[in-house]
Length: 442
Image (cartoon, rainbow, N blue to C red):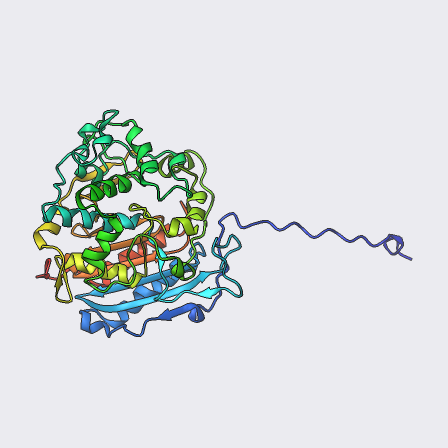
């Protein structure tokens, strides 16, 4: 009898589960069940595009989705005012184990074009628009010093900071202490501004570009309260959103709308120093903590002008269409074209940002495109809009008569998906080429 038959059977232990270091969702081979197309998509030729071109854009979107770092992606494209693409792919809730703070029971929920998501820093373009509107109406001037409106802000060398310094990330106060981001006191203006009033400047105001991830929005909101006697969110709603019939695009949402807001998920490889250190300094907390806080009902019902506007891709692209058309949309004028022309004048030309460590073009509250390599793809030097944490984009490209919103729910720092993210913006530009005589600002 062979020796091995006399040996006792040995049951090897099951190997332990090893989490995916890229923190991705499982992506099925067939993506068709995950795609939702809005009924108001119009034929591409009505917007001066080809249907094959639109489908190539969507194919690039699906390639980005296959990386698994975005549980949901939504994309809306307007060309010459026509919605030629408005689709989502993936899950709004329940796609990953980390889960939202607001409970969603049962199976994962499919994202649709009606699903709103937090826009993070794309909110800055909305806040900038309100500031420029108030400048147009003579209630403030962006060249004025903040301390003329908020005297308590003048200490610790901040008396030189102008409103435009804040808008263009040159105020010298890019960081906010983590202690100021207290969800139990985030609605307390005196508490939050107290930290900023005491903050020391890191660079002389007006001299260096250093992205103000959170701090600038609170300062601008204080100026708005001083000149209008109202909250920034109320000015936005009364002067822009309600006259134009927007359902979303405000800072945060009403409590009854909390279950509708798509969940943000920490995905991708966990960042390590020095990147993690720089991001923690910029946001006041580690990257994953930022993502989880953004699902907190206290965050989603507050007013955080740099970070918590909530919208569907459809409405974000519609807001950018308002700016592309010079402040008039569907026959309703809320701003003058000259105001927007002035707002998008370049303030920083490929200057290395001390916070982000990358060369960017900035205007007064908006991020600009670039000729070679820009946020909105190549050959987009006339485009303007804003990036949101981490792969959210809202932009208008007047030379292409184009307004776009790309909203994603995963929050990776650096991951292998980035070439396909860039390829998607490139594909949009290729399929919607510049026009010889664009309808600039209406």
